[in-house]
Amino acid sequence: MAQHSVHSGGPNGGHGGGHHASHEAHESHGSLKSYVTGFLLSIVLTIIPLVVVLNHWLQGTAAMVVLLVSAVLQFAVQLLFFMHLREEKKPRWNLMALLLGLVILVTIVLGSIWIMNYNQVAH
Image (tube, rainbow, N blue to C red; front, side, top):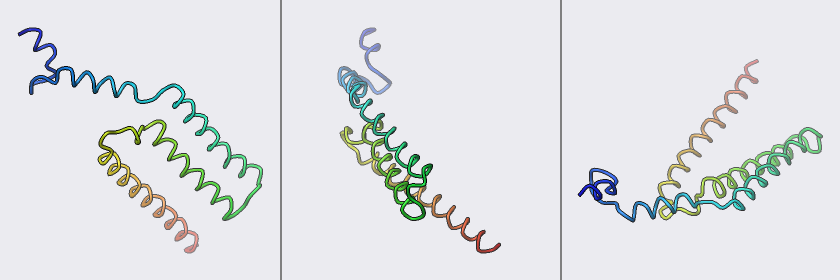
């Protein structure tokens, strides 16, 4: 009886080996190669818009497009290589949380742009 309570995992009874197997699966989410690849892509996607803007290679709308495309690609790299979105068995909850986050992000960004433009027009 004492051994069973040690391995039960909680008040609902035996998660047993299934609990340990799922725990091991979560520990092996990413390999070193995956993390290094994600890190290098993140560095490159950070350096590209920085160099373009600091060296004045592009200006206006073209610079904004480079910034936005790099940001979207950076977002995708973060999701795939570090958040392991593609490796989930049931990604529906992660996808819904992601969509909610995107709605909040878009609302904040567009609201900020709207307020900045309104203040510019008012003065």
